[in-house]
Length: 314
Length: 293
Image (cartoon, rainbow over all chains, first blue to last red):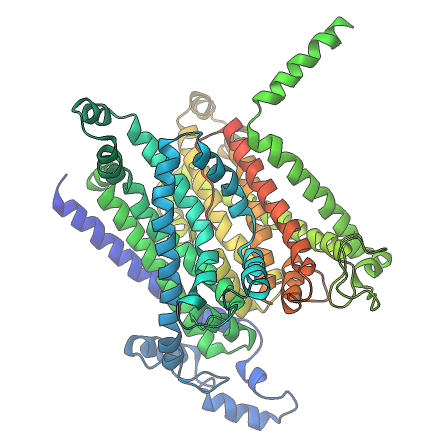
């Protein structure tokens, strides 16, 4: 394969991703405006006179033609002037800069748990197939997928927060606050990672090079943790971008339960209070994050899997 | 007589060779379906409304086993069992409705992309790329912002994403079906295209339809519960499992049953339909893959 083909593939994916991002901005903007119900109706009491309502519409910039409004919205996003929240009058850029670090912290901690626990666990259950670990993992897997994460969260809150008083049940600040939300967020991606890692390692175990290494007299430890591990990590790398996408979705629920002041909680609150301006920016921001992660997953797959790379190059 | 005696062990052995997913997931899914059907009656029969909306204020937050309340009551003294059954009804209704819609739209779109190829395939492929893998819960929340909280926004969100997962698979099937001899023969015989698709494609899509439908019913139920839990899905007073759990969260220190009972109901549905899907996949076509939420 040639390098230029891969470059072309990346560039094509880049252009495609930019188009999708732009379409997403259109969808979010027009979606919120097509539906009946005017933002002014939510900020002003319905018994207010039409004149007051018109004035508020003018203040919020809602009396301009849609195309002009879209241009303001789009221009604002590109230049970072995101405007004010319709409800709290707080600058939206401030909401974002306050809540983004929290979401990154939570998602990062969950991802760390997924990788640090998932990879060795998948490896061990592949090495000792049908052993104790493998069976326990196989049994708990479907259960971990089946219990809705908000139910699990409430169970953990009851046990570790309300009964044992070991951990705080809500808010953020310090490692103690991070434990429960991170564990809840990590559980489902963890189950998936263990499963994929196990399958990937099992595939490697039967390959010729393992037999060669063993015949060479290399220690079991080194064969497993150096050679097999490295070769079976390929699927995990591209999976991670997909997992981050899943994590991002779940932060909405987990942040609300644990009163974690992140982007997910901010979006849910904006929707609940009908805060249009905040809602459209946050929705577009999270949507863009998902689109970019999908792009990274595709690129990651192309770089780590020789089969995909070959297909790309042709 | 002897045929009957000989027949039994054979049937038993067939049961033993069935995939574990069907043996375990099948009964769970069937159980939930029966409960859900009862729940639909609970919801629509005015006489049955009393069962899940009646407040027994002398028995607030009572544990399971309280006389008259088999699984206990919530903070307003409403019967948890009756409310969970009614909530399961909503979940099942939504799960079946969305899945029926996605299977039909995803199927039609997938067949068109796979059979005709070319520009249609490229456009549909791009659409699938964009929608597939988008976090469902995020779209459901955004939809609640656009349409307003309720049954419809959950339905639109789940439908808008799940058709893509299904279309992707059907497209793959159609691509390989198109090259099969019997399709070619039908084409040579100048049978109209719609007839080929209806007679030869649709029956061959049984495997992915059954497997994916089973997965998607489970996915829809868990998403509906999640969105309703956030207060953006089914609105009270209609009982929904997610909303019940959100209510139970407020009295978690006093009693865990208002969370546990509807939570167990969701878990039964999700584990049941997901394992049934796994089992059907092992039985019908191991190449199919599970959707990520």
